[in-house]
Amino acid sequence: MRVSVLSSGSSGNATYVECGATGLLIDAGLARRRLENLLGRVGRSLGDIDAVLLTHDHSDHTCGATALLRDYGIPVLAPPGVLAGSKHVPRGAEAAAAGEEISIGDLGLSFFEIPHDSPTYGVRISGDGRVFATATDLGEAGPEVMRWMRGAEAAVLEANHDPEWLARGPYSARLKRRISSPRGHLSNRQAAQAATSLAPHGLKDLVLAHLSKTNNSPARACGTVHGALREAGYAGVRVRAAIANHPTPWIEVGTPAEAPEYVYRYARGDAAGQLFGFE
Picture 1 (cartoon, rainbow, N blue to C red):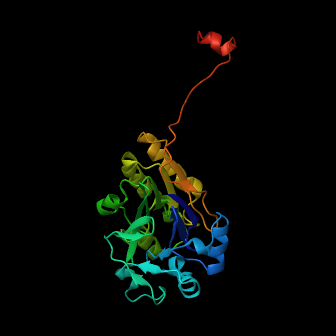
Picture 2: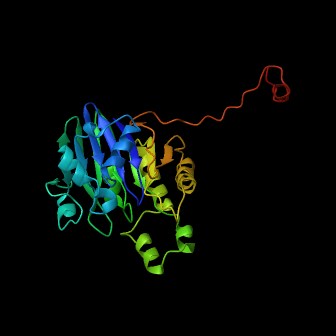
């Protein structure tokens, strides 16, 4: 199984997952041509997509779905909560019940509910003995969310904002309350707590997504999360940030974590070797 987050952020979201002969696009929040370009940058095309999965009814997750269904006949699937009263999901989208596994080609997938200010879902995907999970646009990662994500060897998780940057930033008080609420967006600290909960259950690769341009930075998010993992004894988990319009390198799900080695080597006969009594 391989994964690339094609683009992430308020300007558009899309993640491509493949296993064997099957390719899935999780969210299609960019225009068709932009999706085509981003797929091309990882060596894929729209013809490689067997289905589109929509996690919620916001345009930065859905705006390209109509063209993919209408012009290419690519099936679009979403939970009933997303389809109900939708303004952006295309007509003809198929309902996929949350909490039940669906098979598409070589992959099995399940939608699971996550807390946001509109009906929103994460996705758990399995194939070839590997597990991948994604959850973005959520205000908190509670026990039920963690249950669905546990066991994933690679995951995409929201790390929207740094709490101090949000508090000092230019947003209105009302917007700050919405973002930091249990139905808003996950902070770096919350993402770090979730990561340390997932790490003992096989997590090897973590992509931090939906970073705010105003209230966060890739360095800040990755530093906070990797620091927490390191302190918990899981420094080998690879952490990277996804950003807008720049696909992440391919993640080979299940690649062993890289245990850091702190080894000091000395050439024979040098001063340091003599100092420490090495021959």
